[in-house]
Each structure stands twice: as C-alpha cells, then as structure tokens.
Length: 138
Image 1: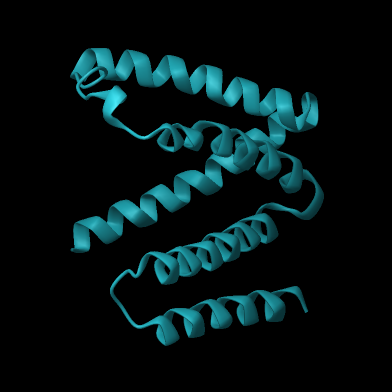
Image 2: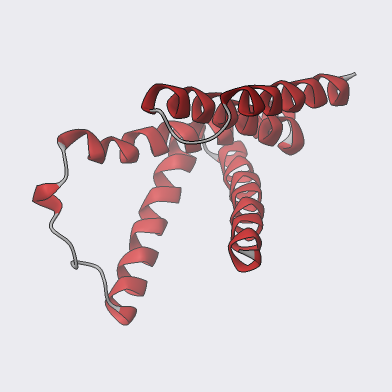
C-alpha cells in the first residue's frame, strides 16, 4: 500500500509540474497550442516507450464501449484549461481548484455508481478541502 501511495503522490507532483510547463508554453503561444504540443509530444513519447517495452497494441480496443474513448477530448480540455489558468491565477490556486473539481466529481460518481464506502465521510472530506481552499485564499 505504501508503494501505491508513493506512486500517487509522485503522479500528483508530475501533474503540477506538467501544468506549470504547459502554462509557461501557453504564455508564448496560446492555451490551445500548448495543449496541442502537449499531446503531440506525449503521443511520440508514449509510442516510443510502448514500442520499446511492449504493450502498445496489447488489448482489444473494439471491445470497449464508444464512450471509453472520450478521455482524449476531456484530457485536451483539461490541459488547455490548466494552461490558461496557471498564467492567470497561479499554480497553487489552479491545482487546488482542479483537485476540488476532481474530488466533487469523484464523490458524485461514487454516489451515482454505488461505490463502496461511507458517502457522508466523502462529502465531509470534500467540504474540508473546499474550506481549506477558502482559508488559503484569505
């Protein structure tokens, strides 16, 4: 479990770093162009990495439902929005608001899909995060 927590924290740190890098690129270009380059370079990176270590074409993509491919367009909006926001409200505020959105949507999806766990504890956790963000802005 500790290893998973460490991976999650590392991934979160990389998201923050990625947002900062894309935000800087957006200052020289635009949020949409920054998102384009993020995905173009990322496509090249994942292609080379997957060809080297395997797994690029290991599944059955036709067996996935059509909506499973909407992660790409959602990711483009996420990256473009983050790139645009960083330059306007800063990295910390952007990260906090993105995390708040993730927590709210995560709790809502858990409730809708009936995920195991205590819904009141989840809602309380999100309320505490939002309160912390409000305090940090003061």
